[in-house]
Length: 322
Image (cartoon, rainbow, N blue to C red; front, side, top):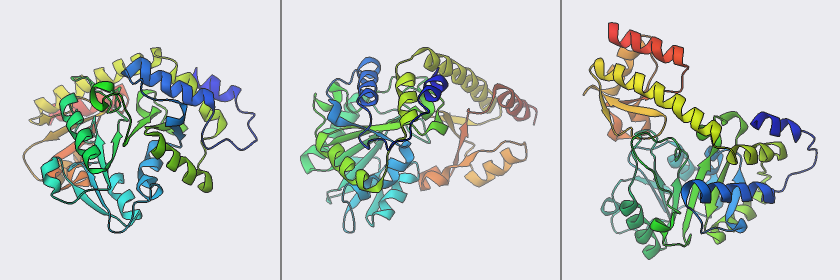
């Protein structure tokens, strides 16, 4: 269905608008409202982007953050938050609690719920507290919510939900991706939504950089956001793989922590993560060492359940017969 929409829009020789097609932006708003209860936004508060990673890496720079500024990201985090901070010439701080930030006021604070790599989901009360803290200090809050529809043992809530933001997107941006929910990583379809002034600033900068989502992808994005059947099918497929892999890891002596959402299991054997990586590699299983995501992950590895059913079954067989 999504491929058909892409193909039907293939005759697209002109420059696309950086702001995106009205239909594409409306599809983003309709999905947020229908699937996640976010009803505080208008068309000037959403911007299609060429994959969420590009946006995350460039966002601090595009919002005018630079030398002398502080950017806070989770203690265990996707490395691109820190990379984007470094590209802007700003300083980064890994912290999970507001008290750990200290007296300095950050220019930008990143949230990531559900988390990559841990799969941790932050509750409404926690999210509301962070929103209030940032607003009191004039800190821009950006929430990476790319795994919002990949939940197994929790009900993630967007930072733009009225119960969190109080019915206003002031000072807040949220990032969404179709790579996970719709298996569209190769299409580079994502969008950012929130504070109209912040979205407008991103748009003004991106116009001058030629950062435009191609027209065919925008049509494909509309088709994907408007359909829930493929999302349910994909969710069930990942849930089954997760169950098989989780049971295999537990049987092999691993401890699974958090992992209530996202496409990963965050596991430990109580040893240096590189020893665990080596142990798994000897059994033909590739996992990401926890230190890739921060010092706090030194005894963990991230195991993805994005391989085929056959490969997941083979990995579990190796785990349980070793």
